[in-house]
Length: 258
Ligand code: DGL
Image 1 (cartoon, helix red, strand yellow):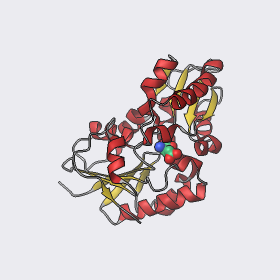
Image 2 (tube, rainbow, N blue to C red):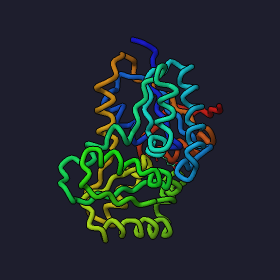
Image 3 (cartoon, rainbow, N blue to C red):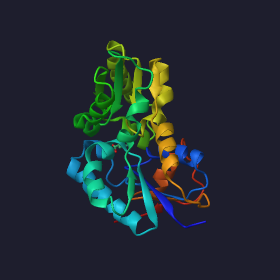
Image 4 (cartoon, rainbow, N blue to C red):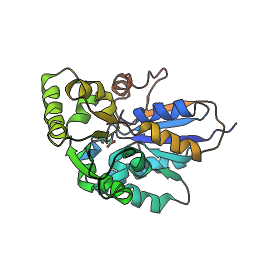
């Protein structure tokens, strides 16, 4: 048994959709989760800003017995992972989200099939999903939809507001009009909204969390005791409330600053 931890990070509660799958796959590991709610949303920030927020978190992980990090954030994986990995690769093994799951996302699709990506503006602008998918099959058509505003719906629990439903409908209309076969939930906040999506549009929704957890499990080997420490960079009580749908956090969420 060691006191090693897996570091898991996101801008807020979204990454808990990944942590819950990691924990299901590996209940014997220890985890430190950081939700950077002070800087949320990452999706409207510049790549340099996202890089700098995440670098602080990685440095914190380094000082706290973390050897493996799961970037439970599509935006960070899209715009900052390459730089961060260059800098930290001798000290940390980093699992980026998009790069780890692109092949599973298109499993079973054929040439000329259409897949829709729902994601933050930064992820859409990066073109990272298209690049990773086209490395595997350049004939699959990827429709990328900027869903700015969805993260706020989740973090502020605005699921029932008419404005929220209207916004979601306009984005799903694009999916429908393009006849997409499958939708990638390309932001870790969106699995919180998937029941609403399904009520509006009945297509196949791909949540990358299970496939990412499987990959991480195959590559990590230490024995912990299932401990999870939760931190957020502002308003830990709000974080705990918003987290409920994916993680019924029993202990306190602690405030952390870098
Ligand atoms: N949940 C993150 C993602 O997967 C970031 C959302 C945001 O902060 O804009 O992209």
